[in-house]
Image (tube, rainbow, N blue to C red; front, side, top):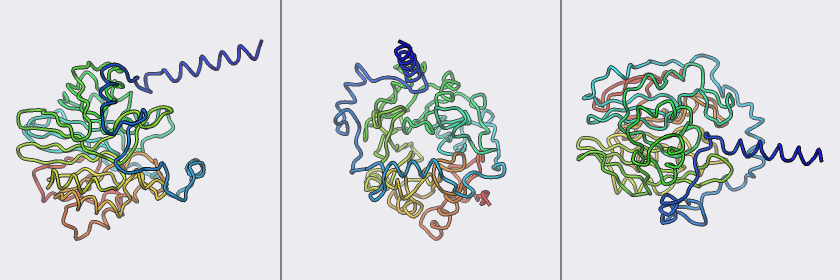
Length: 361
């Protein structure tokens, strides 16, 4: 009898945990019907354009997990406070076109009179378990109170280091609309957003944000999931086109032919925000390696490139500053300008001569 009550207690605890709001919503009704109509939705999950194994051939998932848990990479976390410049976002003229990177893949930008925020994580943690994936000292300088009203929140996919429950809850009253991939809206609705606030896009679907501003969802090579099952929502990159600018918002993606296709369909680009960190040969299909970063930029046909997905969280087995060192070295004498602002530094989207320091040194 004691074993029975213990089993029941454990079952109740598990049910409570898996139903916590941090894990997001469920997929049903009109949303699920639309998901099922996507060409990339098969057997209950979304698919990449190319076959994409979880780990590279020659590696076993069990060994990859063990290596990650026992990892002792030197300098994986900085032993000092990350330098930063905190730009006062509320005091900036809406007529000014600029971007502020906030570490990892979070950034705010103003363009043609609209305010955008991408993949915000400001809770100091990139995991559903508090204190397990902490932000580097000095990197987590922004909070919900620092932001003006956000016209459009853009979410690339539903992983915890891109879609943070605590951050979204604290920002919700400031956000007018959300752009996200198919299925991701279920999480947002559970967290208090109205159905009319959410625009879910399949790859190559577009939405008009303003008479002269369009956003198009484009492919990425990655995966999704917040609990046990992978790929229940769609991961995306985006093309944001205005009268004066053409911007590629990369999200997370391993290298594949889709970059060249996007460059041919939508380029040339004035700006591209591309991931440059948390890579490893063991999972090369889902994150861009440093030497591939340059190839991606060239295939997109982009003028200015901002590397992200580094500088805030240690999610891979490389030194914290290696991503910036490597892309800086690989980008010398290329046909694009590499922009490496400090966290919080104001980047003009109209000034191609702005100079940035190698702050990680």
